[in-house]
Image (tube, rainbow, N blue to C red; front, side):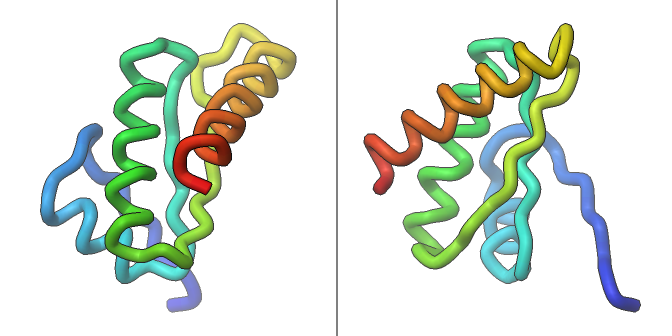
Length: 85
């Protein structure tokens, strides 16, 4: 197989982190909800502690439109750059 797509549960578990850290590409999916974004940020923070060279992708799900999705993604990326480098 060329690709394997694995959907894991929300949150940070040892299994999810181990699988993500061993993956070539990690797709983080979040909704615009503040709680979901906080969980996605926490996951990114811990993932980068385990694998500093990780370059995860972000997908904003359940946004009202593309403008909202883009705004949410910009806020997430901005916070990640500011606090996680």
